[in-house]
Length: 408
Figure (cartoon, rainbow, N blue to C red):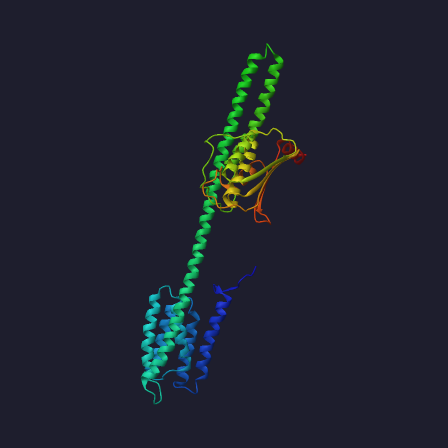
């Protein structure tokens, strides 16, 4: 990374360039001390003009006014045009380019036009005054137009930078809003999971109360269900509190889904409904190949919901971005410690003509859901032009083993 040095609150290159410009004007003033009108007095005026030009970027209007006063003094004293009068053109260019308002540049241009007429009247030689006025006028006008062109380009670049900054802030705000909305939805679904578990515990506890004397074995099994369900509910409650308490992590901006939600509100789908979900996406135009490896195991309701949502969002992204007719390979890999969801599309479909069913905010939602269960998500383009999503979710037994090892 290149670090630009700052001198007097300005970049070193700008300061060096301004010093060189002022030095050039001062050099013209010193060289003309013996060969031009005014002698030492004219040289002193030129040196003051060179000194004033050092501030042409930070105070362009004041510099233009100061140079105009010095040039008028030169005319009043009858010295005529001198070599260091190039400083007048530099001040004119600077006020047009750097002044906050173009009005200052217009006023400087009017003053320069008056100076052109006065300078032409004092030109030595037999040439008519209007010829000198025309020459100086063309040079001065060219400098003014160049300054105006550079000013316009500079303001255009500044406007582009401001627009880019504004868009970046808007993207960050949209990303935070999307994450907050998705976390609220996750919390609501986890709340439903916990509420369902509590209802099961109540029913089983009532069964224990009524059967403990008549059928102790059945009561014992019911008590075990209550204990297991309670542990599971406690774990889901811990995750729910984590979702509500953890600050939103910064995420890249995601385009909000304009798609239709194909599921009723407050409904918790399960993995047994995956075939129906795949059929809906096949009807929407995707060519889906689904395979599963390993031995599926029973998942806690919240984790099961997360797997379902990851599949749903992966297929939604494929339909929206790869298009109708795209081929998607969906794999669920079950192992002893984790379940891995992989969805890879070929990116060779046609544009979607109607909204696709969706369940959240794409990658933002998947990342939040997978993070709740300490999983990992990888997403990115493939060499063939498609897109790949892979989510790894640890199984509860694997998580418990890892936590036990860490505690040991």
